[in-house]
Image (cartoon, rainbow, N blue to C red):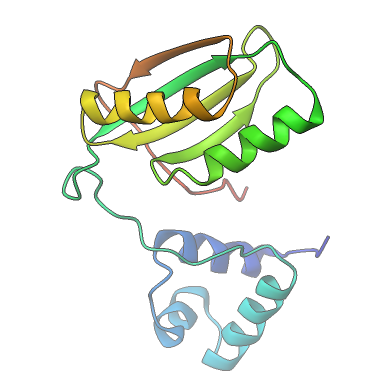
Length: 153
């Protein structure tokens, strides 16, 4: 684990807000030179603290306006089943996140689709490829908060 200081936190906060800003502008905001900013970002990259730099897209404008949370229970918990489930869900571009859960629920899946018909097609593909005992879904009516930012306090 690399130790990060307050300047690193400010750099990371700025990058989470806008990773496309140039080094000069970032340096002005943080109070460091372009070269100092570049060295710190390189160190954060190498340490794996910065995993990727991505563009956040408007799902509605791109035809994937329906957000769905899929709750899954399974009777199988062996390593082979888990590997198959992981492979299948990773290969489905509509699926944005898959989480193994504690409690009554085994897995929670986040997905983005165009509409109910597209969700049904996703559901049908999933159940054909993986043995599941119970699948239910909830559809997001309103996104009150959606963020990728990690708290840095």
